[in-house]
Image 1 (cartoon, rainbow, N blue to C red):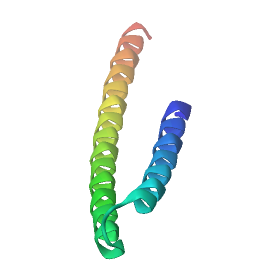
Image 2: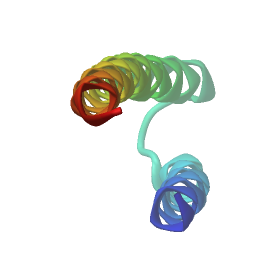
Image 3: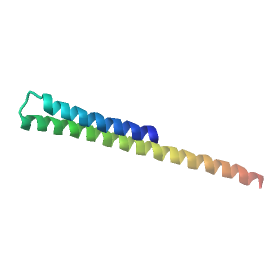
Image 4: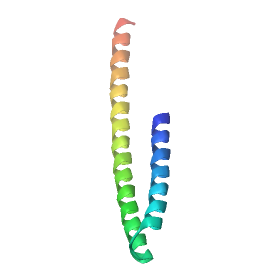
Length: 81
């Protein structure tokens, strides 16, 4: 879990630095720059939401596989008792 936290922190830091650099170096008007940043931020948020949902599905799948494995082990143990 720690690598995920480090990755998310690095992503957040990169976003902040990128946004600040974009505002400082942007050739566009402020309103246009804010629109671009908002649009890119929304794309990133959508991407993160998709990845979180994918991760949730993976976790549920692993949990179900573990349950099946444990149930199979319990059945084998019960055969010997």
